[in-house]
Length: 447
Ligand code: GKR
Ligand code: MG
Picture 1 (cartoon, rainbow, N blue to C red):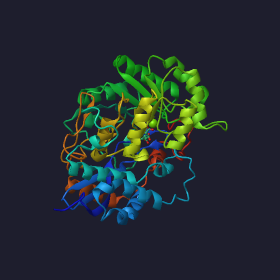
Picture 2: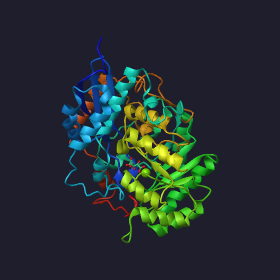
Picture 3: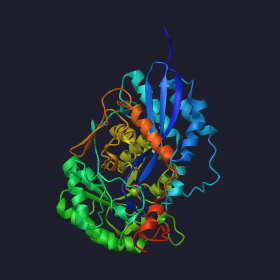
């Protein structure tokens, strides 16, 4: 009889691309395509383990460099494998440690750690070996069977203004699929967006991506959303676009309307974003969330010491799967709240997030996901569903889902056709405002 856990026979790194709408954020307008990297592991028991992480050549190369450290290793040694990867990792020369406190998206690749896609795929294999769902292997194990999720609302620009190949779904039978590719820039259209999402997925929580219009105009949208969903939990995230003074004057009147506020301000006047957010909290009686000022344990130490945040959106692709659940445990013990940030992603990330959130103790805030903008571009044969506002956590062993390699191949072909693999929100933006340049303190359409 063979002893020990199965051996990893093969690690594939597969870059993939998908389609997106002209979504507006502080960093500009989303391009018609987004990219991701997949990890597919095959073990000696005949199982397949999968993981997905941010796209781009930097992350793809980092993953490929890990192949010799993963192949030939027993599935049960996943902690040792990750430790070996960490010890071998050399920080990139261009990484100045700034992170994403000013939402410079060229720095996101340093905040994301490629090896968490390997952690995910190894936990998937380990779960299959142990005959347990992945969430049972994390932290204190499964805390819930479904995970409350939010409807992630975006202002959307008119794609016809850009000479770029955005998708049009005007012939779809699905009202949401038809709507998500259209221009939506007014409070009325954002309420329509939220209502159609509510009908399709049952969301009662909404997050508006701000940093696009003047702050006052964005607050009008928030007010309109609250009017439509009086019992809904509404949050706005301008990604630190407002000065401390603006943030206080915009948010103070919103106490009782906003449920919480995400990254209202950032570094200014020689003070770090952690110090500025602490000052914001002294003045405004709203819980504050972040995915910008606490993206690792050292940043979290200062954020916590300054009491700068209440809700840490600990994305497993920044913190690791175990790390994100460890954060959930700490926050819960300290009376603070866990959640997760997201970027455009496929359904492999959706599944992974479902497991991590299922293992987060306490009362996490509703989970972020961009999936609604990608729904239909499935890379899985059995994508977990969002029903009545809750993402269903798979019950089968490991991730509990099956990868569709034909779909992966198509997404890889699309990736290979793209002239560039890195996110660049300025390119599409320049069709809307010629010569547009990123400014961390100016909403994208305010120039
Ligand atoms: O998809 O453009 C986007 C978002 O703005 C993303 O880049 C952010 O990182 O969703 C994120 C957030 O909550 O800050
Ligand atoms: Mg955010």
